[in-house]
Length: 248
Image (spheres, rainbow, N blue to C red):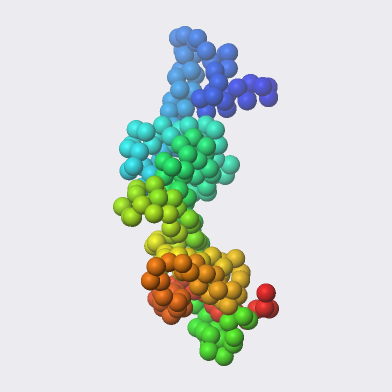
């Protein structure tokens, strides 16, 4: 019985033949075989529909037909593990990496779109405005700037930026949610280095040092100033709170 069930599942996923009792049926029993084919076609359409929501740019880039074929191949190799299909797709970037390579830009684009989807599903947390006082009365070595749920920093290859209509140079993208909509923006080297340290739980002092180091050697690069990043963090709802931490 178990082997028959496994054969049926594999047939539905297009990874094997239908069980023997469903092959070559005629007459009134042929409906079973047609039903299996119809169910498989429904799954194929569902795979494209499920991925088409979070991966809109990838769908536009590939075109409807190629995107649907890609979604069905991904479904057959890594089918959903949960009933809520909004949770399916996190492994697509690695799957594309193994098949198309980073230079195609497809894995990086998938990572960006999945991060945007995750940001929109992240918990809503208000800014702790009282904690901002710590910026004025506590030394940076004892401060940690906590970013809101859903904020993510991604290093994207030049090919990804080309797909996004941006200059083809490796850089980092910051993802966050503002209201109920996810956004992204390209960060310069200093802001990216600072954000990376903060996301890892490092102190503001170590983040500032990393930002300054990232600007060293760049022609005409000024010393790093926190004001620009902080203004954006407050106006674009990146920041959750300023916390006193143990020096690291």
